[in-house]
Length: 247
Image (cartoon, rainbow, N blue to C red):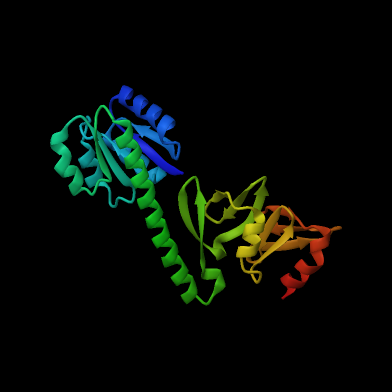
């Protein structure tokens, strides 16, 4: 999925584009809309979309003004406008595409496909960089994992992961900064994470031993994490967990 926003001051244009995306580009998840450059800039800063459909002529600043005001532009940009005289400027901004109003469905589909390809290529590059960085890092807790939530990639240091809780086919990865909802299941994380640091104490959760405050006795017992979260230890996993923790 590709996360996207629309920045256009005319509501009927926004509604039409939303409808076209829903019908013909199901891989696009719309996460917000804005009707001026200032609000558009705020949305890009807050939501970090992968794709921006951007009108050029707007009140209180053009689409170009908005782009120039951003410290960096990580999203793919598709300009959508009725004014073809802006074409050269659009390409100077390395726009993915330039669509004239009324939007042609085939051109829109092509633009989204190209965006998807470029986003995939950028993620692949980041993943190779991540692999090389992890290979150079001997301290396993300082290695970094890539987590994807709604198309957004988060790079998280292993030491910052407190615990991971299963939720059906999803998992909630609790870090010191935020909770990331991942489509990977708990078994995926169990196989991926280093056993010297992480332990699956229950069928429903994995803990980072560096974030455990204490272990409470009981049939299986519970662990109390440093953020006061209590997590149950299954009876069949208790003995191995205690041995690992004492090491």
